[in-house]
Amino acid sequence: MPPTLLATRGDYEAFVDRYDTFLFDCDGVIWRGNIVIDNVPATLDMLRKRGKRLIFVTNNSATSRRDYVGKFAKLGMQAAVEEIFSSAYATAVYLRDVVGFASDKKAYIIGGSGIRNELEEVGIATVGQDDTAAISLATLGDVEPSADVGAVVFGIDYDISYRKLANAHVNLTQNPDCLFIATNDDRTLPGGKHVYPGTGALLSTLIHSTQRTPLVMGKPNTPMLDCVMQKFHLDPARSCMVGDRLDTDILFGIKGGVSTLCVLTGVADEASVLSPSAPQATYYMSSLGDLFELAQ
Ligand SMILES: O=C(O)[C@H](O)[C@H](O)COP(=O)(O)O
Ligand SMILES: [Mg+2]
Image 1 (cartoon, helix red, strand yellow):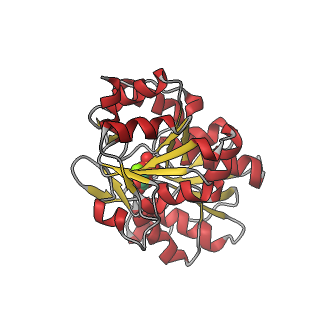
Image 2 (tube, protein in one colour):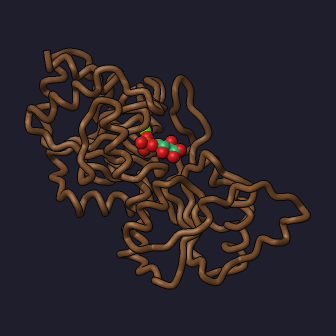
Image 3 (cartoon, rainbow, N blue to C red):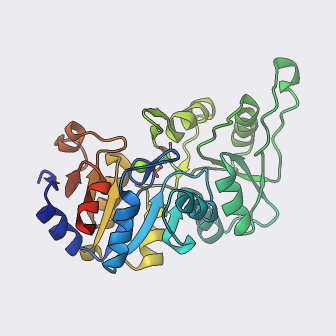
């Protein structure tokens, strides 16, 4: 069944009344980079005033949940740590609870402070964050695998360097027991006015060089889904996932058995949403901020 367009006040009222819990993607739904999307803060306030439960589920691993609380506040919104679920946090929970990551091992990180902070918060030591110094063929030989690296964890890294890739490569190819984990593999990242290379685009370099396939934590994959479903005990019939990417957010919602709303303020456009070959959203609308009309 093709997605239903939400366009009138009546559509918005019926949509909001149908659900108790809303799961929101962040990049491309709540904000683009550090620019909040028009009327989204007022829309979130309206939903809270109507007693709705809000959960934020982001594949962006660059920032820790605690730092996301600050970003929400800076952009005029309130969000508690317990409401925020990032791919970096899902990775930390997976390594601690599913893998039982050895306490004498470290995780080599290609990514931002979000991964380091979330892993260290669950007691996993990290290394590699600052490997940004220039390198040359003459100094490349200094890059050696390390027996105490038990995993390479890869996430969006705005300071990615050849040195980091070389360290990750030798650990993944010289030590078959070294885990290869990706926080997510989104192909693109919605920024200010455009989209840019996403985590998946950067990750493909290491997949190609090592010929190893990473275990991917974020939407639409089960590690993130299991964590969210278990932590929040969602009633699928009364829950809706709101996203801007069909192959991550909408597919995540479909796999979780919840309804889905695709907005057109991020990666997806109307043509891709209506394509019969794409994951079929329940609803679509121009912007989450359009629900602000119900606050007036
Ligand atoms: O490349 C990336 O990592 C993604 O584009 C980014 O993380 C998406 O974040 P989300 O839309 O899940 O908030
Ligand atoms: Mg998004």
